[in-house]
Image (cartoon, rainbow, N blue to C red; front, side):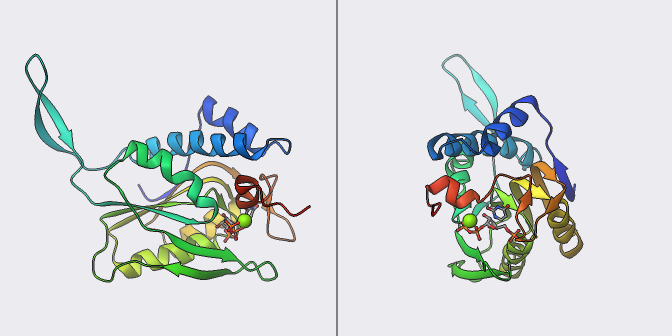
Amino acid sequence: MPGVHEVVHPLIKRHLTVLRCETTRPAEFRSSVRRLATLLAYEATKDLATTVAQVQTPVAMAQGYELPDRIGLVPILRAGLGMVDPVLDLIPSAEVWHLGLYRDEATAQPVRYYDKLPPGQPVDTALVLDPMLATGGSAVAALQTLYDWGVGRAKVLSLIASQEGVDAVASQFPQAQVFVCKVDAELNDQKFIVPGLGDAGDRSFNTIVR
Ligand SMILES: O=P(O)(O)OC[C@H]1O[C@H](OP(=O)(O)OP(=O)(O)O)[C@H](O)[C@@H]1O
Ligand SMILES: O=c1cc[nH]c(=O)[nH]1
Ligand SMILES: [Mg+2]
């Protein structure tokens, strides 16, 4: 179903608390990103197509399943990288198509710097991975790129979003699905999510300049 899906679960609430906490160090921050990405991906992939494929167990034949669609994971550099491995663990056959986008610090507009999508060979379902959805500018830019590529379905998986950001994505791409652990109420003057967790890329990769 298109629209915004906030996934409510006690484990998500707990791991999100660790992620938000300002004293959480990068290694634990990355672990929390992985755990939350797994829980979010479980929800976001509930409607993937399956085809029946018989499997021989050591005892008898059993009904098994395959995932017939081409599924693409689309991490937005840098912070989205931390969500790739946990989702690949769940979908080992997925393709990974990186998109390089950063927010201009002065304007908060997304700047594109990496995109190697092969023309004419779109995946069936794209899962955009980025822990933060603030103004929504980066998610909108990623979705525009993916729909231009020709993907059939796109889902954005973000750990924390702002209300403004999910509204922006929904108004530009009502056909897209957005899965989040929590929608926070607002953005501050620097367009950071409040209360949010700060800069996800810097906290993941220990690049906070002190
Ligand atoms: O919704 P938006 O307003 O576009 O903001 C969200 C974007 O900002 C962050 O990336 P950032 O620019 O900090 O790049 P980084 O991952 O390299 O740190 C975040 O990971 C998103 O990509
Ligand atoms: O709050 C925010 C906004 C953009 N990017 C982040 O990492 N955090
Ligand atoms: Mg960042």
